[in-house]
Amino acid sequence: MFKKILLTASIATFIASQALAQTADSLAHYTNPKPHKVVELQDRQFGETPKNIILLIGDGMSATQIFAGITVNGGMLNLNHMKHIGFSQTQSADNYITDSAAGGTAIATGQRVNNGVIALDADGQPIPTILQISDKNGKATGLVSTSGITHATPASFIAHQTSRNMYEAIAADFLKTDIDIFIGGGLEHFNQREDGKDLTKDLKDKGYQVFTSLEESAGSSEAPMAIFTAEGHNPDFDGRGEMLTEATRKVIEVLSADPDGFFVMIEGSQIDWGGHDNSTPYIVGEMLDFDRAVGAALKFAAEDGETLVIVTADHETGGMTINGGNFEAHSVTAKYTSTNHTAVMVPTFAYGPGAEAFMGIYDNTDLFVKMMTLFGY
Image 1 (tube, rainbow, N blue to C red):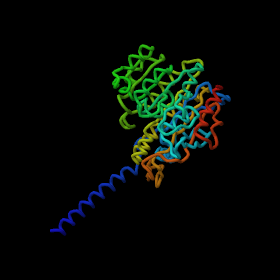
Image 2: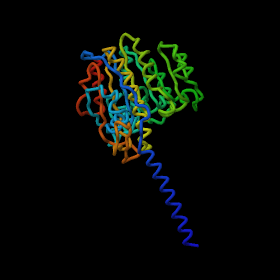
Image 3: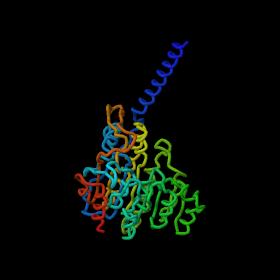
Image 4: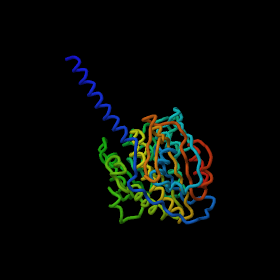
């Protein structure tokens, strides 16, 4: 009887291990069912400084995530158009491995803060962000995210809080800066709050058009506007369709009407979430989605001639490595060293006036300095 119990337990353990192996195997591989076409860009001669800056942040993205995307898209992404390339060191004030709050804050403010902190200095004082400084200098401003708009990375450009988890306080901070347009999830932090307030009414009182989908906003291009695309976070790339690319086009349409120029940060949030899950399909699907938004930004920049496009990341997630792939089959296989962030440098790509300033190796805080210098602030 005892031997029978042991045998039964061994069989159960074997079945469980096989199931885990199959799950791990399914998360390791990705084959792209529909490679996207890369935009064609006309040759342009750019000036030395931009009127507009489009900053795209692929949260959790480093060289491996990018090359996985290149592989499954048949050898080419829109990112390949961006010939001025550098590397950013991502450490935070208190940790060799940053989180998104500190990583976003470094890019947005030029100062390193402790992990979890949103744009506050060591004394708890607000640090002006590139978005807020651009607003004060007469430029139109915007934010886009595939997460909640109150999540750490977008929050770093408009809010000032001791913790990235203070979502309702972050939502209230949106009313303290005259941002022209923001698009993302997180509606619940504006209208289902513990304090009972409905900040969407406050936004309307301040002159904002408030929409609950991109489709609903289709008939309007007049700032200011708030477009909420989900109650909480948006679905993953499979569930949200072309939301990020459409939001990129929408925000450019609205902001480019300002004759003084604009600044916008556009985040592909969920590359990071795929890294936490060690899921190659999730990471690469999000990477391809992000690249389509990059393509929309580059197309505008090439036609406009006065717009600098910057693509970077706040950190890498997952310690992703590529163990196999096939350009023709649009497939890739990866493994992981972590379910969290890592400390590796992340690339920065630039295209347009001032792009050469982003070559080399530098701290993440230097991205802010370079943007401020190019804008002449």
